Figure 1: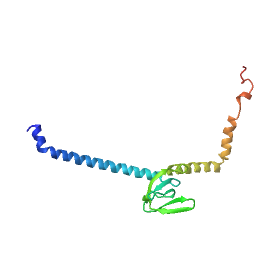
Figure 2 (figure 1 turned 90 degrees about the vertical axis):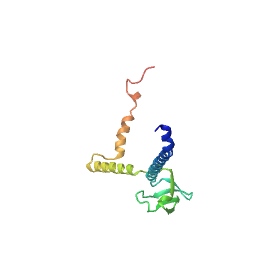
Figure 3 (figure 1 turned 135 degrees about the vertical axis):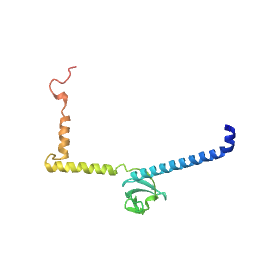
Figure 4 (figure 1 turned 60 degrees about the vertical axis):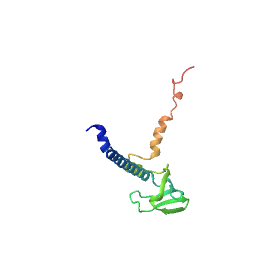
Length: 153
């Protein structure tokens, strides 16, 4: 059996199998991409982030639970005007909270605060201003005022 006869008999079946495999691969890839986008949106949706709701309203996230999407998110539309919306009604994060703190940053700050509090309790650290003052005091010395450092021009 030569190649031309094989293609004429089985070519259509091979073409259909290749198309089915391609469709399966592309749909799986699209689903993975959508899942990654949802996870990224959930990471960016923190209190203080500006979001666009599906109704076209812009607001600021007050509370949002990324783990429990059935619980409503609370969005502040204007100062003092807070509404409950379904968490999936958040279309996208317009401006990730510039002044908001992510969970990882919050945990790191708690750890450093615990270390600081322990240092204060032990007497190793007296205050933040003392730490900054000693570093600033070293930088305040002017090399031109010391004898012999001025260049004679």
